[in-house]
Length: 222
Length: 222
DNA sequence: CGCTGTATTGACCTCCTTCAAATGCGGTGG
DNA sequence: CCACCGCATTTGAAGGAGGTCAATACAGCG
Image (tube, rainbow over the protein chains, first blue to last red):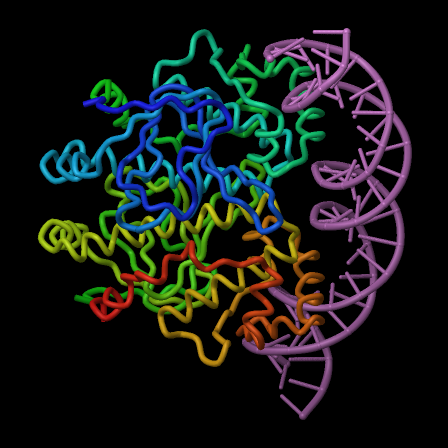
């Protein structure tokens, strides 16, 4: 099924705001982000895409992308013709359900980010983001001993949390100082997940991993 | 179709976090909010529900609510058995599409809120929220001459924007002072929508009103 | 070896919070 | 009708989280 795969290098755009894609895009390797450009030119990252995540699954219903998607790290993207998706959703109820499950989890994640963004200090937000990424990476088997690849700049983290690069730096320093994380811009290690979760006030349940429908999807795509 | 309608007075809960509703809830009159309770006990409002909005349309796929829903003003809620919804989505492709359209617009709205929350000052956020509510109220015919009912406390606004009540008050004072809004806690009037939109940096497109599928839904429910 | 992009650190300033007190207002009972 | 109560609004003053500006260090790379 993996008919066309495209390599996108870090920083490159995958889908632009306003576009009307005819293919559905799926991240196979690497790391990407959803973002919106603000009137003042800033970039607001509203979600991260890791291997197994769809970029624009149901854009056909809304017609046009209301946000863009770009690669954070070098990534491999699969392009699946929309007809293929339509055929799957029409004729395979299980898969249809799995795809909508993924969309609804995206929505739940947005709610968690929003609650975080408004009501918590930046250091807790950062910790919360790391907890989420670790949980998701683990769910797709890309985590080993509390550690996973995370080639991301402090600039990107700032755009995701809505804080300045300078402050990102200070927070990372503090989290490192507390021994909560080990991070060098390439990969992230969490020595003690329980401690980080407690610090972040993290509650996995919004990721709905207990009934995760993604594993079969990844197998299916490869 | 409007078999069971329930009156919920301001402040009362409609659905609790963790619940597994067997009925789908639709707001017919009034105003409600989605919220998450933070570890520290604060309430984070992650969305407003106006007449025509569904509370828990596709909760069946995720299984349990990862957030709660409460009435902000006295509201009338319709409870539709899940089987009815399932029947509609299975046998009426148009309606199925409309329901998913509503879900995807919710998601787009969350992205807009998130981008707002992190990357803009509170006064612009507040203006942006008012722009959105006005646009949505207009879309369901509840707006007259730039004015609509908005019986909401400054506390609620604070929980939605993630700022203190004190600061909400100061911002409202400033917006009133600039002549951008007229607001008395009961209803909101926007004398000059263009000016407010410019101030807020508001771009309606994320609401996808051009292909709004909601009007027929409201008729259908009544 | 110089260039460019990222990380790090300091000093100062702004937005927003917290604490505290005052004002207004709808409802209720006398 | 008025006194009283609870709740939301309003306003002041002081403190903290994070932003902005700016300088320095550092690493990859042609």
